[in-house]
Length: 256
Image (cartoon, rainbow, N blue to C red; front, side, top):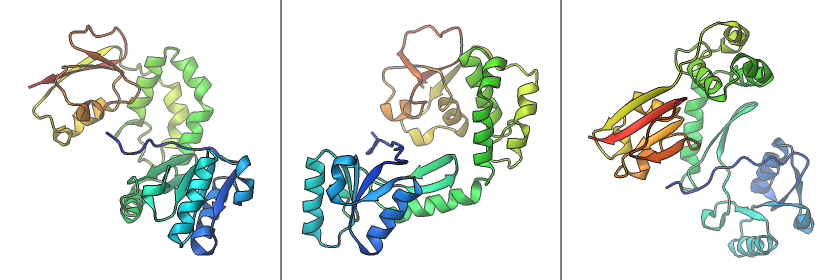
């Protein structure tokens, strides 16, 4: 089970309540403005959906949280994770790629250090690649009319060692050549994985990568949810016995 449901809120041009002054309050205002939002006071709460409360006084923070929550706003209370209805992650920005790292309020310092590690790994050109793929959507649909073929081709290109490897700084420059290539995506494919353990940490790197790209997951009912949740969130799930579909990537998970 995940402790929080990660969501990305679009707040450009919208009011967001920020209660608090000093360094904490200013930091929350900067965060709102960075996302294009308009920081406002509690008096304008009727225009807002989100609220940040940055007050040193615990009773005042609790009172503000109750008032704003009662008005239907989602609230974040600085340094009080038990009062938060949403938390703010550590953000890695490769616009338009946004990687949010959270710990459900357990440790902001840990989230920050994870972000710093990833900052060193991910090229600055990652955002340029995303923009190029967005502007090439029509070309991709023309090249691969079938949605499953399109997804498989993109997965193969973006994977490690692929034509558009995410960690290759030059990948954005290769999109046009990739679209012009005559390389055919893999057709219907069924892969069987026999598990040696019910611990998701025992999955091999290859198994974890396959689960992350699967279209249909056919599984033994005895397999724990912790392993099933390593698959794509939007993958179709079917308990055994079930015949593999005729398109896309199908994974059959068995207990060893």
